[in-house]
Length: 315
Image: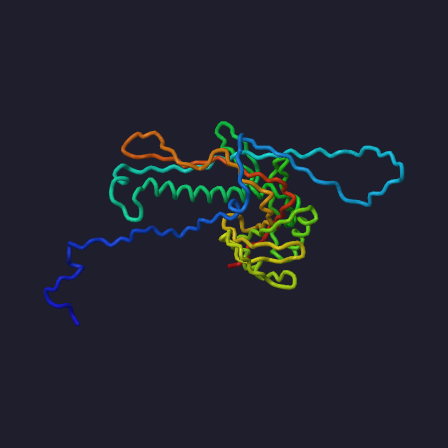
């Protein structure tokens, strides 16, 4: 039926109030599973150093009665380190925007502070998984912390022409010929980690490789469910010959790598905790900076493993 003549309709009225939900819905993912799973510590300098060591190979140790032993050679510890990296974000809010009534937040500054802190946390996750070398600060040069990709060099499977990183020499890895991911690669790296004395428990997998990993069969069973709710990206557990690995869907690592991580062998060291501060006002705006200074400590990279140079499967 047609509209009744002279009836007031919304499309011809000037006095309608807006109906705006008092919420802000954000689709962007906030999880940072790597830095959330590892230890935390305090940095006290822009270059943090520590020492690593390993035991000699076990053998059939037998000596004659009355033997007078000759001192054996002692291998010195390895001294390694990492640079701190400054991560920040800045924004400005006009005095009017802060004063007016707003939907979804009372203070624009408080809302933007919280949002920038989440964004910076994701930036730290990204850098911690991807950075390949430690870069010292210099005039015109921003310092950089070496990430997982630049640490793991002992237990790897990679494509032809690929070169592993050398953290002691601060040498970045070289990408090699890409190959398709297979379960045999995972088993090989897991065995290498175990042989070195490592016990990784987390398998970090980029989204593009997740369906391939889901096709792995494991040992006698395919997958065991995990009850661990502390990592919101953990969905299943792969059980292999050399360990049990929670599979982490990792959004912030390259599509061509998988990482086997022993979380107790890593720490996020913070020189300056994340916080906001006011910048100088030059007009009718409030300028703010959110920043942090951090580095990644790899207590022993040989406890971890990497599968590199993977072909990205077709979607």
